[in-house]
Length: 344
Image (tube, rainbow, N blue to C red):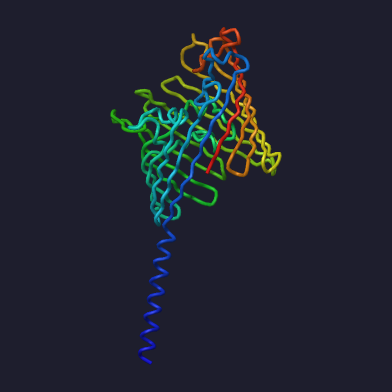
């Protein structure tokens, strides 16, 4: 009987040990994801070989062109984890400002600690919390990007804390290097960020000194509403001030899901520069971008897109080169783009 009891206790202990080891293994997880995109673009209102450009980031080549490729490796072990997002291609190099040891390769690299169920600390380089759009085109409805997105920071290096305050409310606080200073801060200056979230609506605040090419102060609202099962309306609005100069604007993103595979959406954006100089007529732009999105077997997305930007003056003045088919300065620029995005 003693032998039977001893043997039973041995098997029970072994079973509990094996179960504990299995639970530990279940807490460890490794995932690999990413995307690849390419596009064809031709200008409608200007020659393709005359150097016309919109005043926004990325997708600024004519003919056939590459966007970016990225691979995101994520590893989690219990309450801690790390993410490494490697990116290459023109879009990736533009997003990282070629600021890394290997040009345009590190988009994000950070570690995190889930201190509790309601608190997470993140330390490293992470994409910005400002704005409606993001760097990777697979996560945007429109393929080209807005002026609001292009004018703000793409990434930050620093420390942020995310708090879940309730089922509806969230809070993020951050201290970082000045905007888009993605590697080091050699001036002793830092930037500060905050985000208050409520049921999918976010109020974002950002501040740096504005020195050495800094952004200054920016307040940004990002959100959206499901108006029906098929119709969604996204919203973005921002105001920036850097020692009396800056920008402001708003964008609406109505999107209609015609079927499980096809949706159509419009980005209507008004964007303007502002300043204290009364002798300057600061330019503004009204941008209209109509995009179709067709999904092929979940992973491949085909996006035909027509974009028209109308400026307040013939000089442009909003970062781009706006000309007509004769090569003369113009007050509008239009283009057709066909993009293919594969996500995994």
